[in-house]
Length: 191
Image (cartoon, rainbow, N blue to C red; front, side, top):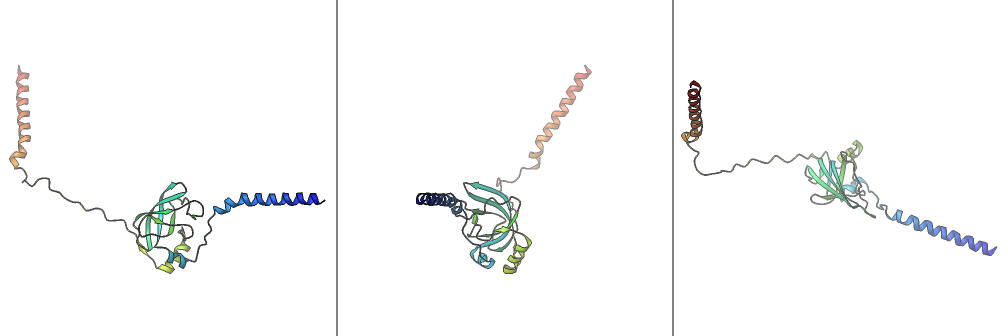
């Protein structure tokens, strides 16, 4: 009887050890941060803006998003900007965001590519989320595309343009050759 109890206890410990060993890597790969309140997320972010994801590039577990920003609430993102999100164990990355989907980005950094993670508050730009952001930060400003580049005229030569006679000479020569050719063809046709 004692032998059976010891065997049962040993099997129980072995099963518990197996469960802990098998479940440890799965739980270690999960994000452990907690999203704070919106005011805390805004305080931690350097830029808060609405943007549509144009493309997602993946390198390993890290993601880089090409974004067209449309409205800025905090910071000054450019119209075409980028956000990076680290992946991997305990990184709390944003994952593969949907191309063509519009998000409210809460990111850090002074210039693109900005950094963002799932703990910072980045999420789909639904009306409720946008309304909460605007209640806290105001209506924001529209992010306009940069103006087109100005044309720069460069002088090819500093000399004056050619005179009329010089420009008309090739055309006049072509007319004279044509007329002589016509006279020659008429004479040959009469013979």
